[in-house]
Each structure stands twice: as structure tokens, then as C-alpha cells.
Length: 465
Image 1 (spheres, rainbow, N blue to C red):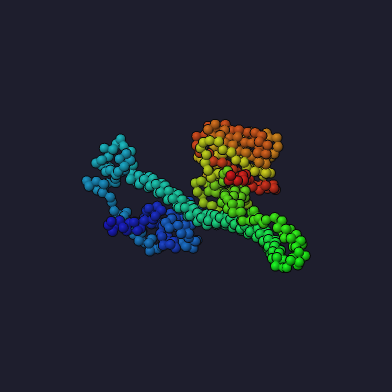
Image 2: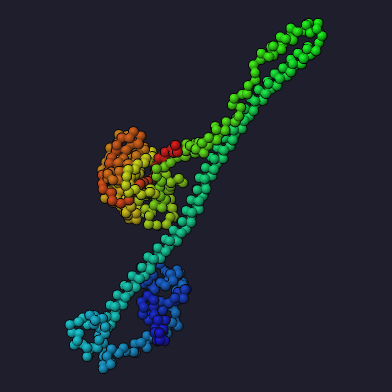
């Protein structure tokens, strides 16, 4: 690049791409034409530098006299120069052919372009610069879109880090509960083992004491008989009968027998131990047929830690605008998509005054205004202002207020049905042909003065047997 081109680039405004006119300098040391900068700020509705985007105050704006003098001098030099379109007619004012998009000599080439659109160079330059400015704006708009996505990714990274920490904390809490249960169950079973050992020890001890007393009594009788056998005849005969009666009485005592069940019942304590603990754990653990996907939840919705209930809060959360998130409707989807078969779940709505429950297709537009209708990809039952309606905005009649709803999907049969879960009376059935993945759908309004502030997916007791 020659010195002339370098100088021209140095003295060109980044907004109009022309040589500076009344150049001004910002605090970031970038220079622009005064009018160009003011126009740019008016259109952008801010006072950021067009190049580095640094914000400028009202005082952060000064005329660059040195640059102005240099730019004016360069402009005069440029004006004095003439671009030679034709060497035969160097002083002739050239024209611009729009058809061939080039400059032509107005003398020797004019006859060749009589059927073309030929205009003065100044007019052509003005038009072409406007076109180039339009292209420039398109580039700037495209860059801004990329910057917006970059900013969103920053939010995604920050939120993802929070999710990792929060999820790790909840996982540890759940395992701590399981470990605590196992520890308590271990202590309980060890205590039962020790209690049995103590009971059987006391029983054996009592039986041994009775046997020892019997041994002592028998030993006394044996000693008495042996003593009598050593006496002379008259003394023997005088004590014979009571000695004989005592000996026979002692001999008639039943023989001793070992107690049954004296040993520890190992089978009772060890038999199917892991299964019985697992079974008992099942009595305390609940199973949800589906859970909510936090990444789809609108910023105004708050989900429970176990992801089975949702309510609308008073404040909006700072959440990344990821593609999955619902921006327009206060809704959240289930985490698992359904593509075939029959599925059902129950939702407790209590006396909540504003809700929508059903299914939504995967391609549903989550970023723009859409209605809860089959036409837009939602098959649901709605409740608002004391009235039940279907997705086609038609009233649905119910005998009693719904507090618990059963949603039933027959994907292959093309049916989404709703029932009163308390008495299993049929409410309404949507019939359609499903061709893509469907997700459980929940939309929640403000609860107001209602006792029920959230709607909840009903859990079942998982007995594991």
C-alpha cells in the first residue's frame, strides 16, 4: 500500500468513509466527522463510540484542529487531481455507465453507450456510496447480532455454573438422606440383634441357675446316702426309710433338657437383609411419573427442588435466553418427550385460579406470541376466571370444581384426554394426528388469594416389590 493510500485511510471518517469534515476526537482517541458522529448517536440512541463502543459523556467531545487542517489540505490536493479515464481526452469530464458499472470517456466512448444508462460521475458516486452505506449497515447489524449471541453465551456460562453448584448440592443432600436412613436402619437392626442376645442370655442364665440348684440338691442327697451306707446296722436301720424316700424323690425329678431357641436367630436378622431394607426404603421414597425441565421454564416461574411443582413468582429471575426457554407464555415443559404409546399422569391444581395443563409439540414457538391451541401446537385444558375451556376456546362443563386432573395421552391413537382424578369422570378429549415429539405442558398464572399457590405433579409411592 503506497503512502497516498495510507494517508487517505488515516484521514477518512469510519462512518461516512469520506475525508474528514470538521473532525472531532472522543476520549478513546477515535476521530469522526462532527455531523456523522451526531447522526450516528441519534440513530443508535446512545453516545457510544462507533468503533470501540466506549460510552462518551457530553464533555468527552472535542474538535481536532490539527486533524482538520491536515484533512482540509488533503481534500484540496484531491480536488486538484483528475482521474484519467481516457488518455486521448485527459481533461474531459467522464461519465458513469450503470449497465457496465464503470466510468467512460464522454467523447470517444459516448456513442458506444447511447442505449445504456449513463449518468454524471457525481450522481453515480452518490448512489453507489448510499448502496455501500446500506451494505455497511447490514454488516454492522450482523455484527450486533453476533455480539448479542455472545452476550447470551456469557449468561449461559454463568447460569450453567450456578446450575452445577446447585445440582451438586441437591444430589449430596439426597444421598445424605439415603445414608442417614441406612445408618438409622443399621443401628435399629443391630439394636434388635443385641436385644435378642440379651433376652436369650437372661433365659439361659435362669435355666442354668435352676440346674445348678438341682445339682446341689442331688449332691446333698448323694452325700447323705453315702453317709448312711457307712453306718452300723442299728444306726442304718433307724435312718434307712427317710434316706430312701429322699433319694427316690430326688431320682423321680425329670431329666434336664436344653432349651430350644437358645441360639441367636441369624436367619431372622440376615435373611434377605438387603431386600428388606430396600423394601422399607421403598415405603419412604416417592416416584414421580415425570419431572419438569428448568431450562424451558419462563423467567417468572419458580420450580421446586424435586422439579415436580411450579408457581409464578412476584419477580423475574435473571435467566439466559437459551433456545429451549419459554419467553412469551408463563409455561414450563416436562423433561421427557413422548413419541409413541400410552402415557398418563395426574396434576394437583387445588383452588389455583389460573392454569393450563396438557401437551405441547417440540416445534412450538417459545419466543413469540402463541396461543394455547392445537393450531399452535398445544393440546390442553384451561382454567381462568372460574371457567374451564379447551384449546379451541370452547367452554368445558364439569360437575364439580377440579382439584386433581388426570392427563392421558394415546399417541398412536391421536388422543389427549382429561379426567377428574378424584372420581375418574371424563372431562374432554382432543383428537389429532401427532407427527412429532410431545412434551407435558404446564402454564401457571398468579395465585392471588388462593390457598394453592402452585400446581404439582402427583407422586406415587414406589414400593420396589
